[in-house]
Image (cartoon, rainbow, N blue to C red; front, side, top):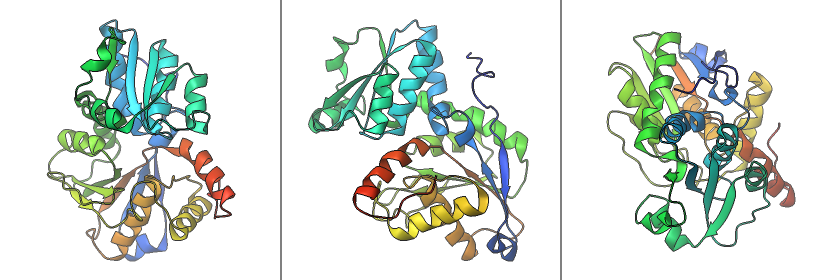
Amino acid sequence: MINMSETLLLPSPVEQIFEDILFENNVELFIKRDDLIHPNISGNKWRKLKLNIEHALNKKQSEIVTFGGAFSNHIHATAFACKLFKIKCTAYIRGTYVDINNPTLSKAREWGAKIIPTEKKNYKIWSRLEAYHQLRENHPNALFIPEGGNSLLGQNGMEYLAAELLEDLPNNQLSITLPVGTGCTIRGLRSYLPKHIHVAGFNVLNYNLFISKTSIYNDYHFGGYAKVNKKLIEFINSFKDKHNIQLDPIYTGKMMFGLFQEISKGTFSKNSTIVAIHTGGLQGIEAFNLKAEQKSELLISV
């Protein structure tokens, strides 16, 4: 087992949020600050990587091969984790015309990752570990991790997050909320939390999701993955001003926006405690602001 007590902030802290809307609806809200685990491998990225790294080290695998988009939080985190543990990292990136000098990929390359822009038709198959045997010849001693870390090892890494939540907040009316993309994190959490704890996900994709034994809110994607509007950015900036907590526009901003909407509707029971998981992803703000600045659009306060 990896002992990271000197490198990572674990268990991550829990911080209570105070706002009038919470008082009016008789709800307590806490944020599980997984964004503070580490500047480069924070949030659910570390939770999903932990058992993968342990597996690679235990099996003496010299390389990790994984997949992601041009601004992938998973690629960013995996590249740094491999540097930390002295494992070779190769990342296949969706699309052949990506800018490998963008803020995310330039850092991954700086940390030693090999970046391979990939045709979308091949990427779609390989990133799900379908027919990835075609890559084995070039990576004979590698652990392959699918896009977003969405694997059984990734899901099982949520056991440690669940244990921290239960130790911090043992409440019979506890609701755990988090943003949902691949579904790896929420499925893992659900499997390790007692049945009486309510688990709710805020979908960031522009199609309805259904995940067993959880509540999924499908109306807060703002047009789809990585889509935003002025209202969302204003909310993120306002939240930062009020609580000194940075949210990202892809995942946590949408979750918190949706959560406040649902609280105002009375969706959550009176006297309940909500713990929102901050899943990190803040590295993407730099690239977002660069694009927004070029378009003279509203920037995210940092």
